[in-house]
Image: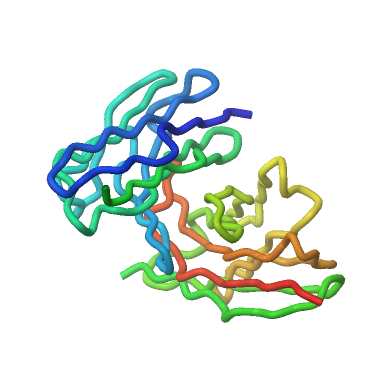
Amino acid sequence: EIVLTQSPGTLSLSPGERATLSCRASQSVDSTYLAWYQHKPGQAPRLLIYGASTRVIGIPDRFSGSGSGTDFTLTISRLEPEDFAVYYCQHYGSTGTFGQGTKVDIK
Amino acid sequence: EVQLMQSGAEVKKPGESLRISCQGSGYSFSRYWIAWVRQMPGKGLEWMGIIFPDDADTRYGPSFEGHVTISADKTISTAYLQWNSLKASDTATYYCARHRAGDLPDWGQGTLVTVSS
């Protein structure tokens, strides 16, 4: 079973700053099946990035994904007030799995 | 527009049974896998399992096999998540989501299940 480990657990930043979120897999994964989600309290999670780097239509271009093998990154180039949330990476292979999440909060 | 409509919040006692539902619309329900995802209070997202409504092929996450049952009725475009005997630790919000090619682009609104004596 693949384990996804996200770091840091919490990222405290100010609006306008750059956020870099890491997702490390316990073994090499097919990046086709690596996705990122944003989750806010009281709402359903929202798919941001799939295939490790493809942005969903309608997602602002300040969100970008990269990586391959075991190391993946979600970057938010300039944080907007609505970007403060929890972010999860997710992989689907023989089964699905989520990372434990990174909370981006306001400094 | 793809929509996944989940059943409402439930309050149950330990040992009781429960089935919650997720009705899809706006797409060919039987031809896309439906995933169930758990979020326990204050915790992260957990992949519970997935079902292909057309033939009921079901795959469970390792932590959930034997503890829940995932099913679907393609004639009414509805997937289900069922417990035979609830525990307090089943208290959580449960989401259904349409599975595409490894990712989950569309989600239900979530169903809060509270298990308390």
